[in-house]
Structures are given as C-alpha cells and as structure tokens.
Amino acid sequence: MDIAPLRSAVSGAVLAAEDQGWDAARASHAGVGRPDVIVRVSSLDDVSEAVRFAAASRRVAVVRGGGHSAWCTLDEGVLIDLSALDAVEVVEDSEGGALVRIGGGARWGDVARILSDQGLGISSGDTASVGVGGLTLGGGIGWMVRAWGLAADQLVGAQLVTAEGEVVEVSDASHPDLLWALRGGGGNFGIVTRFDFRAHDLPAVVFAELGLSGDARTLLAALRDVLATAPRELTVTYMDVPAMDPNAPAGATIAACWAGADEDALRAALAPLLAVDGVVENDLAVREYPDILLDHPAPEPDQQMPGFIGGNTLVVDLDEATIDALVAFRESTPASVLFLRSLGGAYGDVPQEATPFPARDATWFAMAGGFDIPGLVDDAERARLASAWAAIEDRGAGVYGNFSTSTDPAFAERIYPTETMARLAAIKTKWDPRNLFARNHNVVPA
Image 1 (spheres, helix red, strand yellow):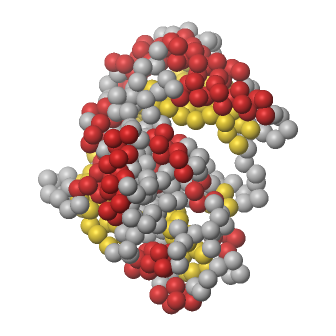
Image 2 (cartoon, rainbow, N blue to C red):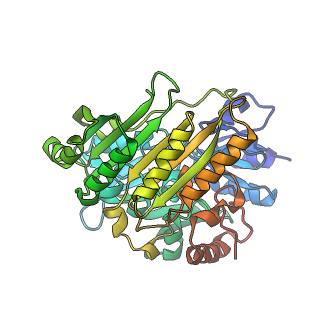
Image 3 (cartoon, rainbow, N blue to C red):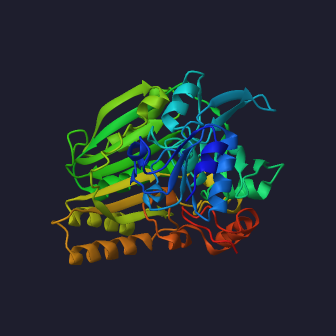
C-alpha cells in the first residue's frame, strides 16, 4: 500500500509499521490493534483526506476517540486517531442557555473539568478516559442519566465527515434523519468531528458510598423500591466484585450521586435504604463532578486481559425472579462481577421513537459476567456461564452496545429493535452505501 500520497495530503502524523512510535500509537485502553496505517489527524481537512484514502484503497475506516472500543484492536484498516481534536467551547444558545461544542477526540474527564469551572455539566459516562464520541454515539449511560437522560439526549448538533470525505453540519433543521441516527445509532454514518450539547447548571454533586453486608437479594429489592419513587436527581449503582486488586476491594457496595449540592436531599432520599439491616454509610460529601469519574490507566500493551463471559441487559421490571437470577449468577462463580445502574427519570421521558436507543421503559441496567481465566475455567464452565447469562438477557428489553466488548458484526441485531434497525439501515444506505464505517456494531446498508 502506497501511503506517500496520504503523508503529503495531511498535516498530522501518518504512521506505518516501520515508523518510530508505531507500537505506542496502536496501543489503547482496549488493547493493541494491528491496522494497516495510522493517521493522527490534526485538522478537519485531515479527517476528510484520511476517509478518502481509506475509500480509495478499499480499506475500512477505523475511528479512535478515547480508545476503549474493542473494534480498534482488530487487524487491518485505516486507523483515524481523533485525539488531537479535543477542543471544548462554551457558547450561548438561541434561548440564552449554554451550548457546548466538543471535538470528536475529547475525553469526558477533560470535558467535565472544563465545564465544572463554569458551573456546568453534561450527562456523560463514569470513566474519565472514555471518549466523548464513542459514548455519545452509543447512547451514553452515566451518573446523570435519571436527571438529564443519556449523553445522546443532550446532543443538538454535530459536524460530520461523510464516507465521501465531505463535511456536513447536522441538526434538527439540517439533516434531521442523520441527527436521529447519531443519537444512539453508533459510528455507522460518518466521523463526528464536533459534538454540540445542551449543558446544564451543575455547581457540584453529592456523592455517597454505602457498604453492604447480608443477603444480596434483600438489599437489591430494597434498592429497587427506593429508586421507584426517588427524585430524578438521584442515580445509583450496585457493584459486587471479587478480590482482584488492592484498589478494588472485594464485596458489594452501593454508590449514589445527587445532581446538585444538597447533602440533606441525598440523605433524605437514601434514608429508607440506610434503615435496612446491612447497609451502612461509609462516605457522603459534596464533590466536584469531575472528581467522581473513574480514572482507569491503560493496561500494559503486553498484558493479556482475561475473557469475559456474560453481558448486559436493560431491565423493565427488576422483579424478584430477575434479582434472584442475577445474584445466583454472581454466587455461582467466585471470579465474576455483578453491576446495576438505575434508570428511569429523564431517561424514560424520551419517546422510544425519538432516538435509536432501545428500551426507554427500562428502569435498570444490569451487567454480569465471569472472567475466563486460563487454567481455571474449562469448556464446560464456559458453556454454563453463557447459558446462565442468556437466560438473564432474555428477561431484559434490550442490550446496551457501549458495554459490550463483542466484535461480532451481527451483534447490532441484539441492540436495536426490528423497526429501528430498518430505519437505521435506510439512513446508512444514504450516507455510507459501501459500508466504509463497518468497524462498529454495524448497521448494514439496506
């Protein structure tokens, strides 16, 4: 492959396997990729040129923002690294509110810090190093999901480079079909080089950590009952993990975030839960929003990450049978994890047809899985875990693509309902008929 024309056309760095810095450039949080060439773009024009090169050379375009996507670890393709496009600009919108324009390579921790200095916030994920682009295009469940909805629900516009290398401005007034698709339809339709979000006033948050002991079924039922009537300012997570490292103590905990600085309001909302035997308050304090985002360092490039047998599901009714199935999965496998996050509130206010994201009637997001540790897990155990998880997923109303590490091209069929997939496929046909952007939970052109 002759990359000399590409080197001449872009102002950013173009790296091939023989170049210095290649190994570092192809490593990310998700692991080490093996692309044909890496383009570290430094401008909008660079993105267009890289896309045209990928199309002309008949190679798939691989887009990297934060670098947490497992799709970046596959072989071949033109890897387009957006990390230099990380500008954050706050302007006044037409209604006097705050509009935040964020580059496609920005990461949520940096964005949250800049916005916090101005008393603002956007519903993002819960990890600082996650990219704005990947999280938003997949929907974006985070600490403000009950207060403000998904990250995608706050998206009001975008700048996008098409499969032809052209630049389009996307809004409800211009290309509304494309904006609809970007609100949860993944990276199927082009490369978003700028996201425009509606921001919210957020002087601070109140964050609590609760220790748990006793029967997990009773505790989860109590947590469910509290969230059924809780103010939408409250979002909680439940985490039960094995002993993995000193920074992640084993056992079950609840974390709670209140969108605002009112400690008394969070204490009142949690009071029924704290009255349950086995629930204790370990910490509760006002914090700046960026300070509650997790900061996971990238693994060493040669570190082999264990496999994960399980998945996630969006649960409409967290009834006793579903709770029992989730807890039984965790109890049956010492090296496993169980995680839940509350939904509802603003998340459920959005009509199902307004975005591609599935299951707007879900009240909980649940994830569980066993670690496939070589030498400790055999084929029979793998089959048992897969079967147990499949039964749990069948209880749900949809799957959240951002929490899946699957690179199976057919996985998108598990994310989107049939009617949604048909609409996405029609939009894909219009904007990317050759499926240049296929390194994702792929929507195949109609």
